[in-house]
Length: 332
Image (cartoon, rainbow, N blue to C red; front, side, top):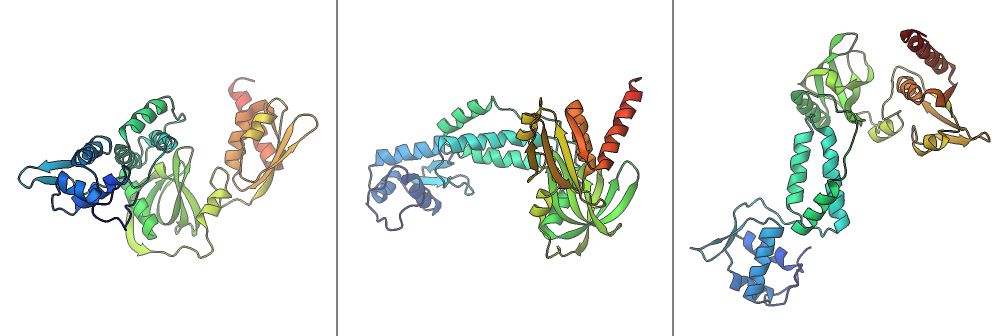
């Protein structure tokens, strides 16, 4: 809350605005005393003393009294009061977001995120902080642990994305290990895993790379220009689970779900903008266009007998091949 700029010395200042005025007076560095601040705020000295105690206990303000100068000062000049009034729902949302950060434990992004949220939480009023912390103890984010991304790779990549720098990377895929120059356009997070999308100079084409497979990354000292017509948000939004397979052509996919799972299939979309068509039989057909058939295949297999691939024929054949291999594996 900003202090009214028309406030004059001696005018009464309300309870919510007083901490910000006290903050202004202390920040000047001339060690204001409680009686002096009381005169400016239009209240008595005991009220100012209560305000200072509130700031120290609830807002974690590093206020100390200097006996020799007979006034107050900040032991940490980098401290700042929170400037936005938060409701209980706001505070709860902050704690839920803080809990979500735990999904990235083990990755380079975890430590700075946790530290940033810890600093935010310390600024919250104690009563809101305690209540929200107790409530969010009953919230947990589940899923697979994220794969490890090397910290030096992460640091080099984040800098390169921000500054449009060309990177020299060593990429270890299941088939081969290659040294490449990469123009990184942006980062994609899918199910807790990190990917980088950009232009690969080795293959002279746009590609997506899985970060745990990047074994080293260093700046080349050269820079690149992003294509003028490229929109990273649109690119990710139009992909399947955020990713594209640049070497493949987009195809129309049609899947038919059994009546037993039709509602569940409709509740959780596969892609943005998919077409849903309920059938009289109670079954559900969904259709969408994608160039990423590999992750579609994995999702289809996960639904088992409850989904049938109607199109494309190439995807039907791959499902049949996978099921035949599984049958032979289990002695069928």
